[in-house]
Amino acid sequence: MKILIIDDERSIRNALKDILEMDNHTVTLASDGKEGVDAALSDNYDAIFCDIKMPKMDGLEVLDTLSKEGVEAAIIMISGHGTIDTAVECTKKGAFDFIEKPLDLNRILITLKNATDKTQLVKETTILKKKVNAKYEIIGESAAIKHIKDIVDRVAPTEARVLITGSNGTGKELVARRLHEKSTRASAPFIEVNCAAIPSELIESELFGHEKGAFTSAVRQHKGKFEQADGGTLFLDEIGDMSLAAQAKVLRVLQEHKITRVGSDKDITVNVRVVAATNKNITEEIEKGNFREDLYHRLSVILIHVPPLSERIEDIPLLVEHFIKQISRDMGIAAKKVTPEAYDELSKLPWRGNIRELRNVTERLMILCGPTITKEDIIAYATPAI
Image 1: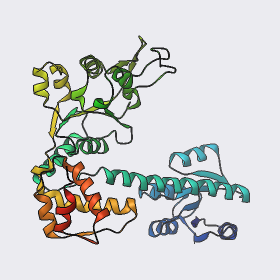
Image 2: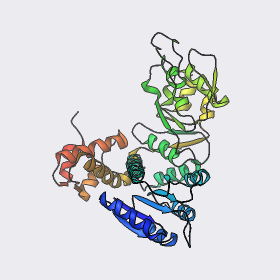
Image 3: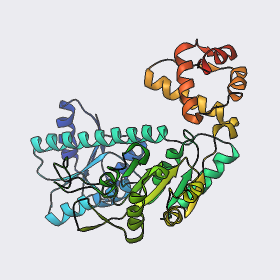
Image 4: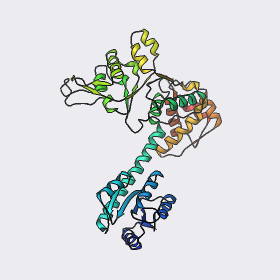
């Protein structure tokens, strides 16, 4: 583990160095704040011990500078003139902990272990977030996709409700997630509800929650999706399949920002941005009496249509390359090359299942083909026998 010690007292630096090296850590020393900042910015450390009273730049200035520069190391402040106010100030500025001199060996080692555990957890969380974001990345350079990305980037920072339309498998969820990730609500929950997958008699309980005893199987209180998404984004997928009764209650939430759990008469205020999606023609559903027109107008402040893959054929090579990398990583198998003739053959297929179908076909080709995917492989494996 790499550790930086910033202290103007040579005896303190050397004592800390000896303690930490005995515990098998690699230690770098800095004799003042400026030297410490330069060292911290030129290398990656797991933890930094920093004195508060130092010449040239004191410890609080060092802490401020490293925080602004985005240094991820856990910073542990040390001082011989410690007060509660100083400790609180250090914590507010982002320090992991505050240790008073004279330094206690056990306190140092315990604090260091806790600090490095936290640093490792932050690193792992960052890696996981990058993997999740990569999974939901919108891939493509076609005019249609560039237009969608542009609209999303302009709309995301606002509170405008968005209705996303498009066939099954086109990537409507990716658009919803990009709206959330680029919004001011990105650090809050993104909650997804597939309205088509929930029976009509359970949709209200799922969305608004229920109280214990509200119905036979309600053995405990349950928070609905609106409450779970409070402060964040609620994605109502396939909203065209929602019952009229549930639509009426969703409309009330959009108007009043309040929900009522099933079995309760108490209103609960929620702060939720609603993004909806459907594969149906909502105008036709309104004419048939299956969808409320007032709800449609509430949801569709911004309309985003995601085109089928057949209308963005030029994106197929980029999508296939993206899926090959994903599948190679997830399955632990070598990535494969695709010949230009194979891409030409892929572009001729109808792609009724859109991006979802292309992903499945790519996985099939990765499993069944040799190191290079050819035109003959596409003919043999891309379209399964029906």
